[in-house]
Length: 305
Image 1 (cartoon, rainbow, N blue to C red):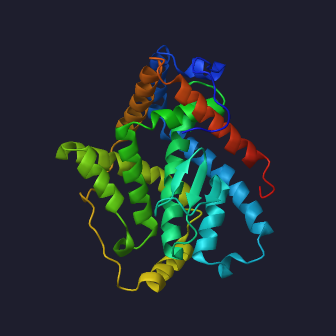
Image 2: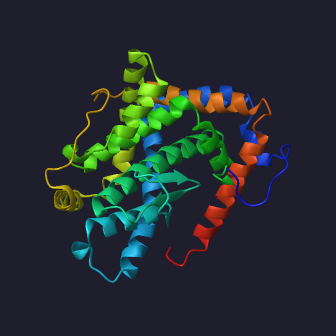
């Protein structure tokens, strides 16, 4: 992955130095206890993410020529997505799209219902990262800057975090898209090829469901019942009864406790710190930071928001 000019491998920002430090482990333990004392402290993370997007969403609706009631499901989803992050149209991305640097990539040549799935799936990926960013910035009492976002992107690149993220995205899609139209082929492929132990599969699925509940809480005010009905109608229009439904590798609806969720989040972050401390990934971190600098700068200067 390369974005912009190449950065020397040994160059790290002050923000990286503040994050990538084992002295933070004690702070994380204390902050986890702080969160467990009052669930509303964690809930504030989700509210903060939703409120920022809601301001953008209201601005976009004011500038849109169509009334919300007259919009297609796809147009509504695109406005919701842009309220949270940037969107780019790329015919070369996979069917589910992709996400990196606060940027969702969508293939506009797909059927409208397939694009809807891409938007919801990639929005979930974005919000998964956003929640980790809120946790890290608050636990270390530091601003959420490009370096912090780059570190979170780096640490969420582990296999376990990636699988939890994918399950989470599937579970979020399941809440807004009719079950008979869910495409789980990618999810099944990842688990069949990366995880051999059935207990690990069940554990990671339950974690994914747990984070999906938080993301559903963020998205639910935006994707209301009227929009969910529009989505169902669009899928019926595009596929009728011809969609071949592949069952997920496991059916798991349980969620874990707040303690297990917070422990998992800090474990993932601490694993990222331990990995980054080897110094082998300085170049990766700096290139990730450059990517966020470019996309975030473009978003700050966007005439849409």
